[in-house]
Image (cartoon, rainbow, N blue to C red; front, side):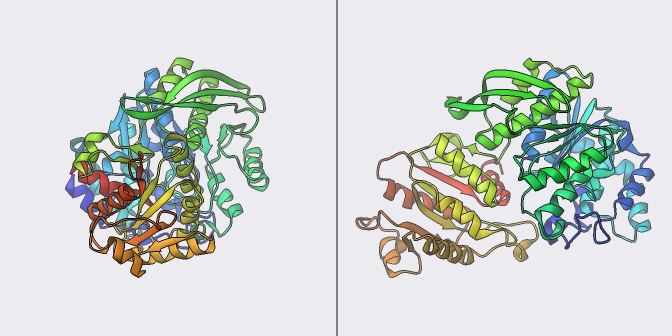
Length: 512
């Protein structure tokens, strides 16, 4: 498979270089969707040989897709799934089968060699403009056609209207899903929430149902509903009064926390749909994941309304069996020990926006409500660092923050120096009136600089903020040492977050 990876790496990769301004908008600045359609034509239009659910949105796309894939698999369907980014291997982006698993390397390599001449010709004919994402999308769609999947679940990469995945036609679409509308990639999507909503509404197709997540502010929901009206698409809203789903309690299953939920939905407008599932045990934690589960459930109910066989039992089992790396992932004691942190409670989560940080804080409050908390954070340059920090500084029992650096797609140009992150956290703490002890202060060096076990008397009310010099492993040890000393003998929680890249680094330490 190395040959395919090297081939893709030779192409323009906007995940690494950053997306040009306006590239995701339906305008003269937007990506050329015609280029992708021409590539599909040269490959025999594989996108026309399977039916698809198309998912766009700022947050929640991958989790919603995972829930839906598991529901469909449980019912017996052979499913293809295309998502991004990946955690450990690019094969994670293309799932196929029942159960849907990452495409085997041998199968992916074989397919690549089958279509390589067409890809070469297409790249030449398009003057070298085909991107990494466009070619990988073409590979995925060709695989789904060859495997004769019953349905595919497709996650848009950026926006919707001009995204490479939007070659899916009305006749090939089963339903569109728009999860949330937020500020991420704002420049690439037109500079406002309204322009982002317009870009994502581009996946709505004629006479095909639209599932909306939300909740949305009124003007954003209006934009999405107006587009659906133009396309004669019935709208199913998975939030609001029709969603009476609730998290009832936290329990532990195989030593991992799970949430016991009621998934109760009743939609009366456009498409009358309802379901009443009690005591669903979800491994995907947090209110945001319950909302993602509600979107997947609404989509499954839409498919059932269209004549697909999907039982309530399959929906329940699909929701219960869904689990994703790097999304509220609690490590086992064995995994913590493998990281050199025996006995530590460690949570990995790829949160990197204000909204996802808020969701993570809520999950922590729910699972470890009174625990002292230490963070190990690495972030890309193009994220809202201060807004991210504010969510955690506003939360309970934050004791320490260790800022670090990991390899981020795009290299040093996209990696935020740990010292810059530290200064941001210090400034945000001061702005919020929160006392901090940071590594530029003599007191910090006296307490922690030499690794001694000196007393923390008089320092316990201050959040410790430090920029780590070494590896992620060193940062974890620093955070754990500080946390143990500040928490005394209380159960405490160590959280690794700020990007999927730091989660990947932690998992690579475990899995090699």
